[in-house]
Image (cartoon, rainbow, N blue to C red; front, side, top):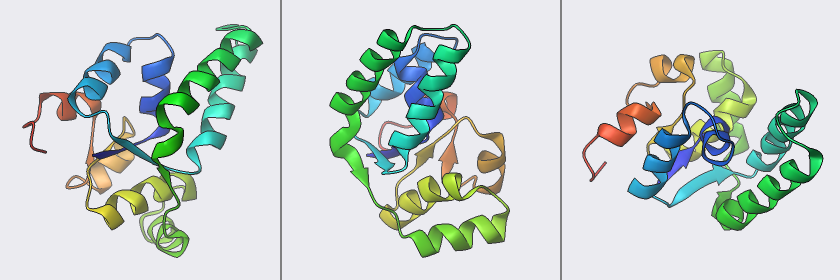
Length: 138
């Protein structure tokens, strides 16, 4: 079981340069945990995808339904006060801090392409590439 940042969810569901890595991560461990915030962030990603011409609204709606089917039952409310403290102490967004708080509370690795998070929390946050090439018992 791993905590997945919204960027990894987007890479899995929207074809791009990191889709193959996201698919490898899914194959390696399909038990992806997310804070409830992920739905709001994915909506924003999909709206931007439509605005920039990457997809039609119908395409985005189909991706939304796919995401809910795959991950809707894997969400958990993080400890919001812990997220606030992490955000303040490490000068990261409260959004990122929610993913991190969830990972820390459950003693799970977090997979994210956010280099600031990788640098600030090297014992918790792995890139997709690091996760996919790491020991299977991670």
